[in-house]
Structures are given as C-alpha cells and as structure tokens.
Length: 324
Image (cartoon, rainbow, N blue to C red; front, side, top):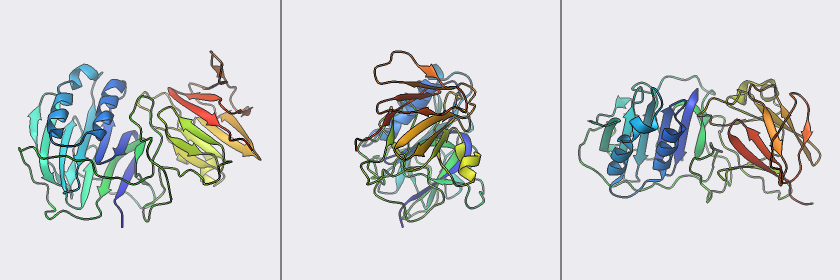
C-alpha cells in the first residue's frame, strides 16, 4: 500500500513534493509562501541549515501574522521541520519538539513513525470519511495534511533531537496537481493511474487519448479536459460538481482573489467553452498573440481556440487543443 496524504478541507495552502510536506496560512505574503514552497526540493546533508536560513527571512517576507509547518523527510524514516505561528508538525499525534530560531522553531533528526501531520494545532483533527483529498504531488487548498507512511520507522514516537541529520528527497508518486504561479513545479512527473487508496483525489491524470484538449498551468502542471470542469478555490460544492456533471479542479489561492467556484469549462464535441460563474474578480481570456486581457461576461460561454490564455485571479492557464 503506497503512502497516502490526506488533505483536510480549508482555505490555506497544502503542498507536497518529493519528500517534503507543507501547510501554510499566510494571506498577503506570496513571497514567503513561494520561499517555503521552494524548500520542498531541498535534499541532502545540511537541510536543517537551509531551513534555518529561511527562518531568518520570515519577518522580511511576511506581511502580518503567518502560520506554517514544513517537514522534509527521507527514506530512512527521519525528518527535518520548521514551523511558526499556529503551525505544528506531529508524528503519530505526538507534537514534534524543536529549538527556537529567528522566525520559528526548528527540529531535525526526529523519527517519522506511521503518520505525519502538518497544520494548525498539535495533532490532526478527526475528519469524517470522504471529505479529505488524497494528494500525491502538487499544491492545493487545504486546512492541514496527514501523511500516512507505507512503512513505519522503527520508532513510532516523535523524538526531539538537536543534531542535524541528512535529508535526501524521497521518491514520490507520479501524480501531480496544478499550483500557483511562482511555485516550484514537477515537470518531470507523469500520471499513469489512480492510487490504490484514498478518498476523492486532488490531482488529475492526463488521458492517453492525444486528441483530448488540456489546460497547462503556468508552472507546467496539466489538467485534461475529458469532461466538464469547475475551477476555483473550493469548487467541490458547486452544483455542477455535486450533480456529477463536472469535475472539481481546486486551485491554491495565496492572494485570496479566486472565488470558490470561479469559472467552468464545458465541452460540446471538440469545442470547449469558458464560462465565468459570477466570480468576484472576473475571468479573463487572451489569444496567443493578444497584448490585452478581455473580461468575460458572467454566464456567457466563450469558445476557446488552441493557444488561448486564461486568467483566473493571478493564475495563468493556457488552453491546448490538439489537431485532429
């Protein structure tokens, strides 16, 4: 059974890449979010020193109060963590202990056990079945995340340690989710199938049909349009999704500029149309050579052509329509 990462519903940001897991609630601080997200790719000896350096920049990168919990893991069953504000990592529901540094708290060399939690508070809240996402790789909205590890480490308790341990990036699965502009991407990933377990997934696998149109996010992530889609900050409650006529595509929104259900993509044969769902900040579109954005009228379908660019909040997406 593979590792399973449950993402709890919420409006903050959860990201997973390689051996890293991040929860961050920092509205108005995109530079801090991007810096923390970039740390997910850190590997090798000295990972704790990298996190300590980032901690020293928190005050200059943050705007107002921020909370986050970042953990880098390796395949030997140990981890390095940095957290601040309401953020707190926990192993098997036992809070990880660390040392205070400028900008937060740092811990290294602790055992991962069977479950790893990042989020507000000291342990994962109980969540009814069916309301959490199963994230393999990418960035999505979320109120916290619990990583259930496939192979438990010899010790299942969180053991505080002051010594630095090597942090090598663990190999993750091949699924991916779109992320905000400016975040790191996983361009080498390719989706090959559904995971063996977990609730509703927060990622999408490209279709094997090369004629299926797709959305390419500005960080390289891809979503296939093999059915109608609803895009937004929390689109899972929109009537098109709840009725089963469309698939939800949640987009991480560190700037709080996206509506819960911002826009929809509808298919009619090979034609794909973009519809603004009455979003607060509007949905914009521009042709491949256009130099200005055109705002769509809410509820009016706009047919898309290959190369058209979509602007939802600050997220730029390119529509690609393969030739017949």
